[in-house]
Amino acid sequence: MNLDEYQQLAARTLAHDRTYEQQLANAALGLTGEAGETAEIVKKHLFHATPLDRDAIIKELGDCLWYIGACATVLDVSLDEIAQRNIEKLRKRYPEGFDPERSRNRAE
Image 1 (tube, one colour):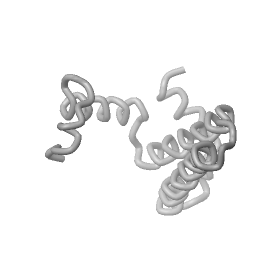
Image 2 (image 1 turned 180 degrees about the horizontal axis):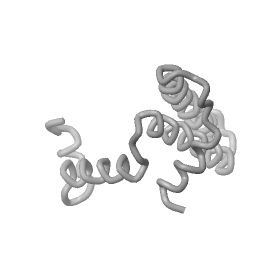
Image 3 (image 1 turned 45 degrees about the horizontal axis):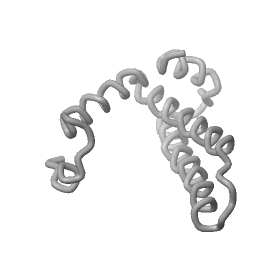
Image 4 (image 1 turned 60 degrees about the vertical axis):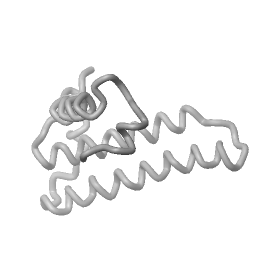
């Protein structure tokens, strides 16, 4: 499955009866909630000595992906395009791979 196929399949579960603004807000706020749940799992592992629950993280990352796809769908942009633009940005920012010095002193 590629990103655009995922986006198309995931979009079947969007609430299409909401306004554009409601759909956009739901996607953005949902993403922050799911990212927080992912961070909570990692926090409990690192600071509360609980075993790392990889399956739970995978589920939460899937939820993050769903909300990213929802946001992209609302904005009428493909996940493939978002991924491609991100890679272009990373190539420009780190042409030889990650560099801590370039990270500290980036132009953008």
